[in-house]
Image (tube, rainbow, N blue to C red; front, side, top):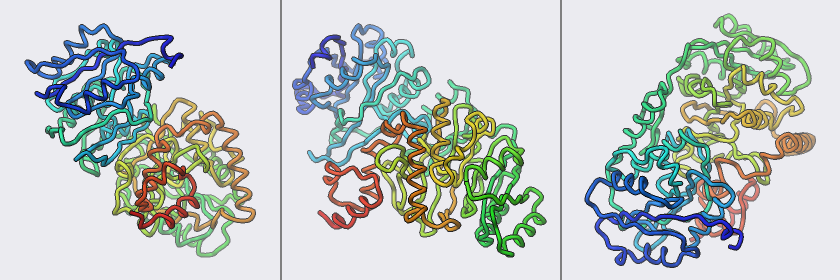
Length: 530
């Protein structure tokens, strides 16, 4: 408290109460009365003009440092201004946002845990909402609010304008806003119009499509110049797997300008060489090379890219992948072609129709964790993350696209990582170059994981796995010491509740669920708890 009070900031709370009196809104009134720090003024709107006009008039005349806009159905945590002051005492952020929860019939029903700014996710789904603290001078700079009837769309547009104008944005991973759904009126969303206006402002070549889940969107970027794509597939024998993989690419792919470079690493079976010959004759875009060195995933892929690839973009693809979406290359390429984006990953399913990969959480006990692994595809994960394009810290190279020029710039895969963590390391190198990585659910495939190599969970393979984990930690110490940018511990734990059908959520207050053994133990202990 003393540290914070050394530098005071002033706040204005704007109350838009839709005909209610503050005295009638007990929770809102109490939340303001019981603030630990009371350095704010109140403005109660009188409804004699459009909401956005009221807001902009206040912004134009406001002298206080920060503004918070509250509706009649909202109230704030007693520690609200204390937590906000803690943040801006370290840096004067232009925009701050927090987690929020929802109450109905005086009962808590849900919480929306958020994460740092994910540009691709906010284009897909308005995950930030209106739990905002806004710097007054910044609001004046971006000219405040645009004309929308829907409160959600009013603030969605504001957030998008903010992201376009500043990176000085901060997320407080605490529940500081509460919504009383009994008082909330539903308005027709204008989010499609919000996105159209964003596209007009930013001049991006994109088409707005409906997303895979309700109230979500898919921004489909125009593919530029139809570049050549080099698909790199290392393998050792397993001719049937290779056949399935190659047939799925040839028979399904709607994008035709690609080459496939298959790298045989110490294959011995006659059937494998027969399949190689058949496919080379079947399609001139396919060629095979033999590179019979001790297995090193990183070295083999680097060798193929450096010596044989001609494409502008590289797809690293496991031989145990079966493509099931026809526009899978376009789905990856529309992001890979963007300068700011590094690695792009796919939605991968196990043969039993559970999720294998939707992105990787980095940091924590296990260093790198597939955060939605084992979710049944007929179920929905937390906040529909398996169905939304979003920024992620890392993606698997079982199916990954990256610009060849960027791959060269970040010096390819680290060849000290012979089997594990090489993809995570590559993604983190891209981040250190100022890029962001992306997961897209519009590239979908089956992944018959590790059939070629077997498991890494025992003996010499486990020893090697731990050694390579140590290399990853050494290479990326600064990033790994921090919480994942996009999948916070709160979000990850909620995902595990849904994946493993844990009824007693209070267990999460006691245990951080990072590793599979812990998750399995909790599943057995608490399945069926009331």
